[in-house]
Image 1: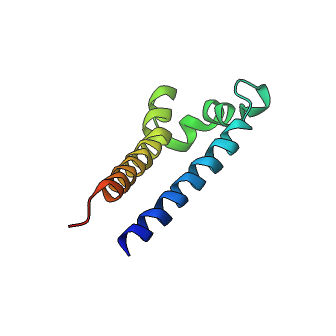
Image 2: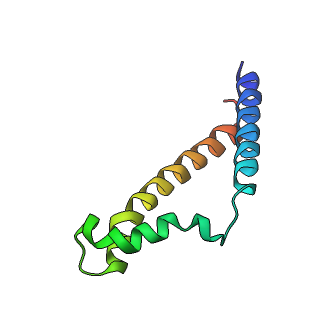
Image 3: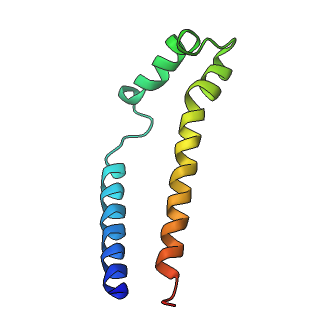
Length: 89
């Protein structure tokens, strides 16, 4: 039973990685039409966050959530690796 679960988990992980790779390959980095977020941060950053300067508004107002989510993703990834590499006891 445990080996079948590991196989299914590995298949799901491989499919998820393939989907993420395919989706990220389509992004054109540095293209001016992809600067909507940057322009929004510059124009509305101080108003949205109430910070004193633009750097603080971006770092604490927007990036704090991103960092929190990245930490959660890292924790889930480590838990998944531990689950996959753990032997049957």
